[in-house]
Amino acid sequence: MKTILTAITPSGHPHIGNYFGAIKPAIEFNNDEKNKTIVFIADIHSLTSLKDASIRKNNIYSVLASFIALGFDYDKNILFKQSDVSYHGEMMFYLSCSTPYTLLTGSHAFKEKSESLPDVNVGLFTYPVLMASDILLYDTDFVPVGKDQKQHMEITRDIAQKFNNDYGKVFKLPESYVIESQMIVPGIDGRKMSKSYNNYIDPFENEKKLRKTINRIVTDSKTPDEPKDPVKCNVYKLYSLFASEDEKIEMINKYYSGISYSEVKSKLFEKVMDHFSKSRVEYDKIINDYSFMDEVLKIGKDKAQSIASKKIEQVKIKMGL
Image (cartoon, rainbow, N blue to C red):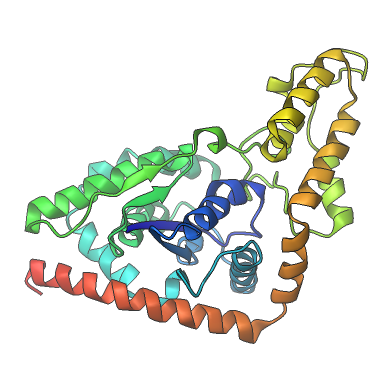
């Protein structure tokens, strides 16, 4: 049995990029009897950029409700909140003492974020060490990642190998699981879909707001009759994530023969509504049932702690603690 670990940071409501990059793969792994799937809400990671406690709490519930509404089986597998398992922070410090400073200074993600954020804190710099702790605590075999997270996985492997060299083998070297066709989901402005860019599409938003968001997708100024290049069009890129192969071919032909962007946006809206129709109903039921959501988190906490406590003891013994 392989252990698959996925995390999502509650910096906002889950969006379509989160769905294709983390939630959908986790649910697919969850449905395979050969896998043990672990999903956690990375609320500690969110501290590096989100400072509003009430927003964080609401976002945590939103992420939890999204996973359940979309079909994640929290009884069969593990769904928990990062801050509920204190071993993550403890493991982070142990690994920090074996992590070369220069390994972190080479992080592309830190360089990119430090140039755009007003608050460049130490937590942002040491983010890869906490990520390594998250992964190594659970003897993870595979981690579904996007293109922007591949370097963090390489850093995780380097940290694990350095610790193994220092104290003897205790950690597996986890592998990245990259879905090439879904590595980058474009936002409504063409950049990677991200809460920090405010360019995301929330599939659980009310129908009116969802349509308005989709209508804001940036396109060029070509008229409906002019041929268009679907490869360069943000609307088509998003449409193709939901369409069948036949539907994609049909839409590509319409792009070259002439179609209005408003018509494509309308088709995308229909696809999103259809794809998430049942999940939207479930989400609305779950999101206001706090006692149910708290119980799910408690179940996940107990399962995660049982695994993490054993690994932390192995590490302490190796370190002579």
